[in-house]
Image (cartoon, rainbow, N blue to C red; front, side):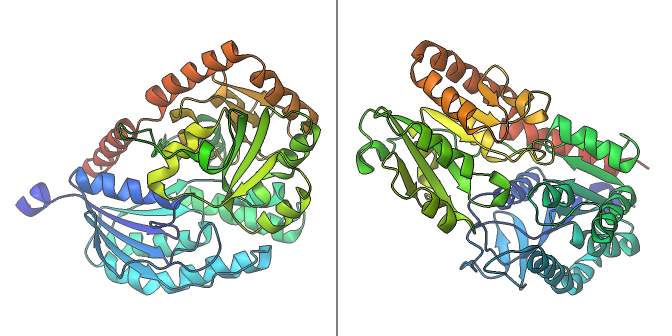
Length: 409
């Protein structure tokens, strides 16, 4: 009894994506694990081998303790071109590879077993580990991957496969003792899928690349941008982003010598996107930058571009938004006015209709020609990042919520 009262609470995490992946879900799962470990939790993680966003295996440390987290990385299939069928095998291979390690870890009696979704297909593995050990099962939804697959055309809607996927998603979300997601609109959707808002909570991602006090790398000089206004996209280049609209907006503004477009990232659609931008002198493609230079990259922007396909705005709240706002620059997002993404940038950015390249081009040109308005939005972006996206405040709330769950019946 005394041991139960004094021991540190134990969290067992199943997450496909983890550090050293530079963008996407990986940095936030790593930050959550490290943050809870620093707040007194024993944290053990079963992760995949790092591969994102290039969809190529990356070098990484051997299994061991990393920043207070006991990490075990499991092998899995990594498709070079992630079609729907290959993604399915990708996720299933991770679930199968992780199962033995997760069951062994469950013998150490965790208080909570967390599965980070995607990949929802690994959630049954987490459930199998949680139930015999008496742990609570917690699912954290970074995006609603089934509906995102519909929105991006990876999976057709209405067929038997789609119905099976939606049934599986709903069943797993309802089996969880606790579920969380990253924004208000997604939290409402999560409650709807679970059939109740009970035992749900918001766990936002955070700004993890604020500008430091030291000198910043001069990308303007390196990339010969001069004093042009820079419309920047930095992140994954895949179907979900719908980046073709950025190329079309650049084409419509090709006569504006004062505006340059910079697309900085990797992903399965980059080659096709570069081909679509052939001949546009106002577009540059650059690779992802190392973590120590991301703050400088973010501040290169005069305006950040956040394209999303129609129908995807409430299925995922892009993690890149946090660093965009923290850079103190306005954001232009392609999102309908009644979506959660539009609400997130209200007052510190501009929402234009999804798929409307003309509206995107006009919004970029308008901000480039109105420095006073751009300055107001920039100031509001800094304030929004500080009030809503602060890392320590988010992790403190998560710590308190989880301790309450561990202490309760």
